[in-house]
Length: 130
Image 1 (cartoon, rainbow, N blue to C red):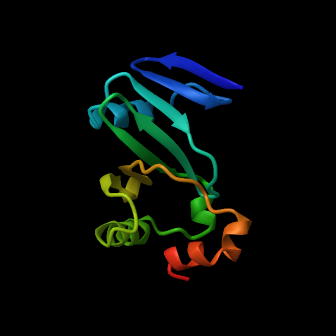
Image 2: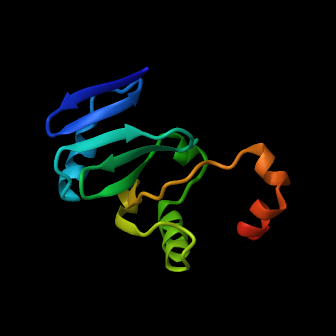
Image 3: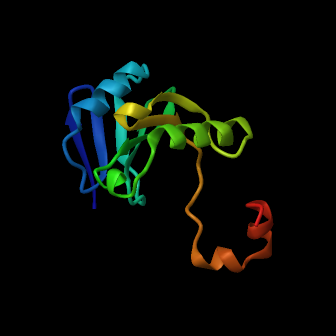
């Protein structure tokens, strides 16, 4: 079931929506979002990923999770790799980054997560460069 809850100037929606993290609302404000809709995105082992959007903007916020240190994730390297991928047109552009704080905001791009069947599709493999 979808849940929507109003907190401050943001609306949190999605399955099991919970009160907005004050950092998330502050980032939405910093990005210039008005009446932001904040939706948790599925997936990810080491990060909490949220979609932040309003009538004019559509972003994805990645917040480092506690497990990142266990995995020895280096946020500076992650930011560098995402920047290179964005410059090459392989990833959405980065809008805001504070690697030391474990946050990166990029533009939202519509799409879907690859599924097991995709790994057997020659066209899919060609598109991803495999």
